[in-house]
Length: 430
Image 1 (spheres, rainbow, N blue to C red):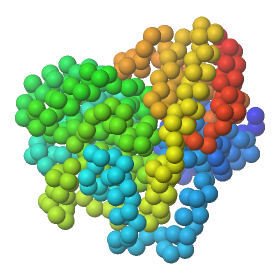
Image 2: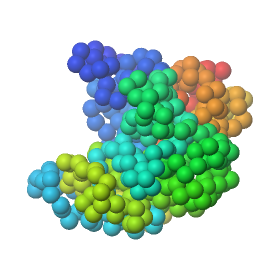
Image 3: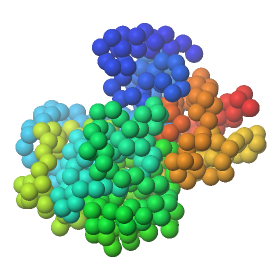
C-alpha cells in the first residue's frame, strides 16, 4: 500500500502545526507510522490522498451515523450556505432542533447550544457549581470530558493514549476541586460523599464510556450513583457527547433507565460539523444568563450550518422506521464475527459493545469493566493489528483506548470483509 503522499503531507504539516495535527490522537504516535491525510469520504468509506480506499470505523469519531456525505445533509448545507453561514442572531432552526432534541431525550427540558463537546462539559460543570453553590466535582478514571482544566485529571481518550492524563498547565487549585473515583466501583464514590459532605456540586461521567474504549456500567453502579446524587443534593451529569443518539435514540440514559440532571451532547447533533450542547431540567437551566446569573456565551453557538446538518441527521434517526434495530443488527453481525475469530484462534481479547459502539481489547483478562482493566491491555499488539488492518483497507481508531463506530451505511459485505481481514491479522499475530 503506497502512502507516500500522506507522508509528504505530514512532513509539511509539522512545520506549521504542533505535531502536524490539530487533535493529538490523529498523529498515529501510539501505533507508529505517519497519519493518513484524507481527501474524501462517501457512505462507509474514506479515501486518502494516495487514493487508497478504506472501510471507515472512526466515523469522524462518532458523528457520521448516517455515513459520510449523506446526500440530504449535503443538499441542506448547500441551501443554507446560499443564505448565509452565520448571523450571530437567533434563527428558527435553533428552536426547531432544540424542540426535536427535547422530544427525543425526555430528561432534557431546556437546552443551550455551544460549539464543541469541551464547551458543553465546561459549561455544564459551571452551571452545576453555580446552581448548587458548591465547588467540588467527582469524575471517573479513564473518562474524558474534553480538554477543560477540571477534566484533565486521570482522563481518557487522547490523554490516556499519550500517557499524560494529568496535563501540565492545570493549576493545583483547579486540580484540587476535582475528585476522582473508579468507574463501576460505587464504594469509591460513596466514600468521597462521606469525606466531602455537602461540598460536591456534581458527578460527571460517560454513562457508557468510549474514551477508554467501550465499557458499560453495571446496574448496581449506575443506579447507586443516581441514588447517591439525589440524597446528597448533587447534580448527576451524563456526558453523552459520544453516546447521545448513538447507542439508542434516547442515548445511553434510555438503555440504562437512568434520568440525569444535566446531559451534554455533541458529535451527531451537528451531523459532522462542529457542535456541542448541554441541557436538562428547566429549573436548573433557567439559572443561565440572560435569565440567571451564571454566564456562558458563544459567537458561533447555534450557527445555521451546524444546526442544519444536525437537524437533518436527527430527523433521519427519529423518523426512519427501525433505524436503530437495523443498526443493531449490523453492529451485532460485526462484533459476533470478531468474537468468533478470537474463539477460533484461541486469541486473548475482549470485545465490548453497546449499540453501534465497540472496542476490541487486547488483553488476557476475561472482562474489561474499568480503567484498571483497560490499562492491562497490550498496546504493542494493538499497534500491529491496527497496521495490518490498514493494509487490508480497514480504518479504525489509531489507539487501543478508543471506540469504533458503525454507520447505517455499512453493508453486510463490508462488515464481512472486515471480519475476514481481522481473522487474517489475528492469525498473523498469533
